[in-house]
Length: 153
Image (cartoon, rainbow, N blue to C red):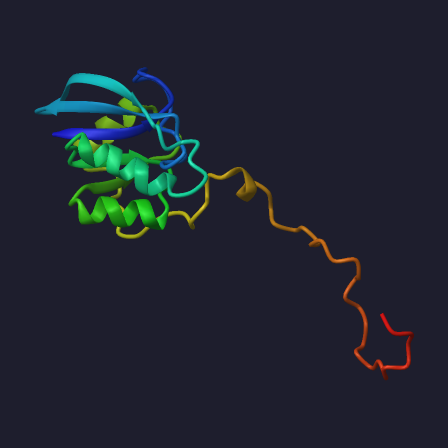
């Protein structure tokens, strides 16, 4: 079985990356029986894409002919591409890559049936809590009872 894991480097002891489309790269791991036979790291060229990073990342791992993906979160577009490619998607939080592979082998990782993040989850603009007040000058507290008597604008 061949698996792609969201990662930052070729280290099996690192934690599974929390994002899929904008992670630095993927560890491509070949498993024979329940043992890791070999692994390599490929960079995620889509990481800096202004749009479509998830789709491009999903196509990258699909081109590696993997049967499964392990990541923290996966957006709807990436999930759709992986699903259409018949690639199973598993979610892992707080686990090293090696631990995630072990849990997958033991049947303990949960297979995802839907995307776990909204679109644009990993982008810089979506990292805050979303309490911005907008760019308008007014506070929005008017009552709307204007009678049109003010000076023309």
